[in-house]
Figure 1 (spheres, rainbow, N blue to C red):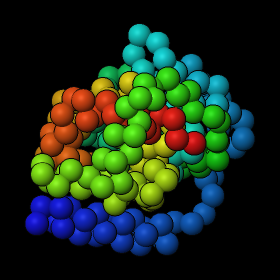
Figure 2: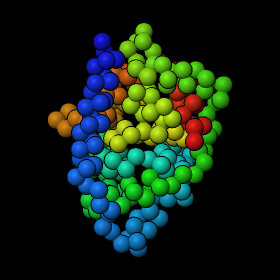
Figure 3: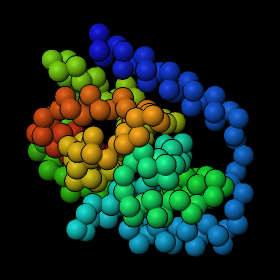
Length: 213
């Protein structure tokens, strides 16, 4: 029953996203020079082609990300629905046109994934991704993120995402997401799913996703 409810919620959010997209089909109205200045700054943490970076803290892959999701998350940093002091300082100075321009820029990048996840866990991760875990009401990840983990609309691309970043986020979901209950978004769908996964299951899913192109 819970899985059905989650799927219906996902379908509703996708429908709302499609309607919003239909109202805003235009290209971003920022100059190439302005956009380059911002993307050069993004490279500092997210890599030269948005492929992510492994340092003291894993910096997520932005390349190939769904534009709507990326815009939503930048707005979530601005509104403090996602708590991250660094990204708040980066995002709150961006105009709506620049938010759109950045999202379009990263959508079109497609470097090879950094990989690095333990491949011996990948088969178990693929099974969870494709089939879910009915015993703990965890639906298939593919329901929202697509069979190739490329995402759709407000649901993010996971293919090629750094395995250590995915692991960190899933194991600490409630500490970063949904910080303003008065302004929920589709990330609320993930909270019970993240809580329904063991650490070993999270690591398996992350290993599978980290090597997908």
